[in-house]
Structure formats: C-alpha cells, structure tokens
Image: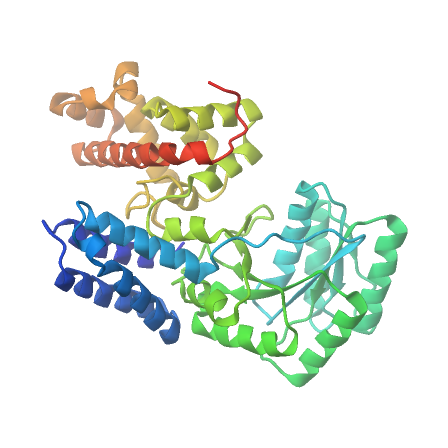
Length: 440
C-alpha cells in the first residue's frame, strides 16, 4: 500500500536527519523532493501545490529550525498535513434507519459488486441484518456475482432478475427488507464504462425511491487523477456522501487517496485492501498518513488482532505494547497469528519500523516469513528475550542454524530494534487511548 511513495518519503527524511543543523536550504530541497514524489504518485497538481506550500510555511518557522530536533518536527508537520489532506478526522458510517439504506455507485470495473458483499459482512459484524439488492441489470454477470458472494458470506441477496426496471427492483427490495425485518439495505447499482446522462438520470430515480442514508462512490485507487475527475462528475449529478477506495492492495501510487477528499470535500469512508470478503477497513486519515510515512498503524493492527484472535490473546498483545515488554519471542507468536489476518505485506506494514523494502514490501511472502521464523527459532530463549546480547559469534551461529546469512540476521535485529523504538513512542500515547484494559 503506497510502497513507492513511502520509500520516497523515507529517503527524503533520511537526508534531513543526516544534517547536523537543518537550515532553510535543507527544507527547500526536501520540499522539492516532496513535490516531485507527490506528482509522481499522480496526486492532483493543485493539491500538491497547496500541500507543499503549507508544509514549507510551517517548517520554515524559527521555532522549528532552532529546535533540537527540527527533522522530527518537520516530519510531524508533514504527517499533520497528510492527515488534513486525507480528510482530517474519520466520518462515522451512518446505519440508523429501519431499514437503513446504502446506495453504491461508480463506474464499471471499479469493484462495486465486491464492495457491496464486503459491506454486507461489515454490517453483520456490527450486529445488523443486511440484505443485498442486485440492481445492476446491464451486466448480467454482476447479478450472478452478487448471488455467489451472498452464498459465500451468508448475506441474503434480493435479485428479481435483469428483465425488471431498476427502480422496480429497488422498490421491491425495500418491501422485502421491511417484510422480513432486515435493518440494512445495500443496493448495488449499475456502472458504465464512462459517465453519461442516461446513467445519472437512472441513479437519480433510484435515489428518490430509496432515500438512502449513505450514497457511496466506489473508486478504483489505481486510476490516479482519473478517479478524481469521476468523483467530481458524480458529485455534481448524484451528490454522494462518501468515497470507497478499492484495490489498495495493488500497485497504488496514491494519487486518488491523496486528492479526492481534498478536491471534493467528501470523506473517504472505506478502503478495500484485498480480495477476501473481510478485506475491508474503515478509513482513518491519521492512520493512513502514518502508514504512508512508514510509522506503522498499531491501532488497526490491534483491531485486526481482536477480530481474528481470542480476546485474551488480544489483551495480552495490548498489554505488552503498553508495558514496552514486546520481545522476539512475542514477535514469533504474532507472526503465526498474522497468517490469519490478511496479506503479510499489509500486516507487517502496520508494525512500526517494519515498513521497509525487503520485509514489508510487495515481495514479502511465505518465503520471507519462513526465514524470519527460522532465525528466531535458532535463537535461545534468552536471546529472544534480550536480543541486545546477540554478538557477532551468536549471529553467525543463528545464521548457520537457520540457513540464512549474517546479513539477514543483522537486518532482522535492526528492524526489531527500530520497531521497539517506535513502540516506545506509541506507548507514550497509550494513556490517551482507551484500550478497555483493567488496571495493571
């Protein structure tokens, strides 16, 4: 997720940290690189200009340049401005009606039908009774696809067929929801290869019948600035309430995510991060900014852990993070659990200090995981608990025992130390976050 952009930001900040004293020339050079990185990520040029201008103005303040850690303060400014760019604060997804209705719109191929099924699973996890409505009559495969996804997930699908008018299908879906006491109606509307008046007129008619609480525009995050143009067109014609970014697990440069909220004023509410029906995340601007800057996303990691691990194991993980007692032995245990939580590159990218090429990048897979496991298992229990005791001879022994190189062992230990430093910073914030734990 945004790996190329993350790598570029990492290089820019590394150069800043290498300066004994950060001066105006260093900041200007860094901002030129930031501008280039964002433009190469296909972020809208207006957004880039405003973003770089705000960061430059704040970074060149005397208080920042004269501080003992100007590089860290500049990184914080970039993080804060990224959060602003992505929407400042998360917008709650409203599901309060009886039934609460959600209308899903977007172009063909953007991932609307898959998202409809994922949203059904998401709503069910929230304790609601969802009903999916197959209202894409122009692509018969869409109706069948939704039926298949419904059977796989156990979420019921209302699909009268492609021979009925779309408005009638939606109206009958409403009646079915009220009759069978479904409290959430999710309508998958038809997409087109391009925006046309006929399409918009049909969506307007559906919206009048449905009166949805939420109208979500699904955008393919891999289309860059084109996604922004599509969003602006839909905003004029349909006035959607929120954005869904799909295919964030692919080769996403970041242009859509970093442009759409700023240019449309509409919040990003969900991110699809994989092909599985559980690969849907509520969108948090601050967490996404942290991921882009390689700072990890421990809150999302903990939430995923709570979904896939029993409550006691999740509480143990939280407690260790708060007490700064996370060891390589714990890390090994968590790696075993990570297999259940989704693609490894995404999960490792949520761990502070691990979003570096070669471990959290796209090439990470089962092979890389097995190497890490082998290295940790080749350590003694004492070495796992106190990795600082691992000297040169022990590293050679661990490498020989795990079938890896000393360089592999060095990289793992360095990354683990960096991760612990990030967790130490995170622990200072823990008092401000309610983890629902009993007093220690």
